[in-house]
Amino acid sequence: MRGKLKALAGSSILHVLFAFLAMGSWAVFANRMYPMPRPLISGFVQGVLSGCLTLFLKSVVEALSRQFHGFARLWAPPLIACLGSATILVVIHALSGTPEIMKTIAVPLLVSSSYAAIYNYSISGGRLRNHESEGS
Image (cartoon, rainbow, N blue to C red; front, top):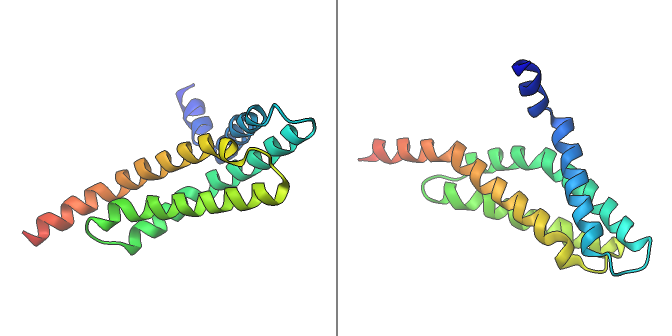
C-alpha cells in the first residue's frame, strides 16, 4: 500500500492535475465578480499555466542552481524563477483578457515562488556549506 501511495505522490501527472484544479479554481474565485464566461476562461488559463509551471519549475531551478556559486546560489535561482513565472503569468493573462490579473496570479505566484525557494535551498544548501568548508 505504501508503495502505491509513494508512486501516486511522485506522479507528475497528479501534480499537474492538482495545480490545474487548485490554481484554476483560485482564478475563477478571484474573477467571480465579472460576467461569465470571463471567470471560467481565467480559471482555465491559470490552470494550464500552473500545470505547465509545475512541470518546468523544478528543472529550471536545478539548471539555474548549477550556474551560480557561493551565496548567490541560494537567492538567484528562485528569484529568477519567480520573475520568469510572474512575467509569463502577467503576459498570458493580459492576452487572454483576465480582468483581475494581480488577484489571479497572487496565490499561484506565492506557491510557486515558495516551492522554488525551498527546493533550491534543499539542493543548494549542502553544496554551499561544502564549498565554504573547502575554502576555510
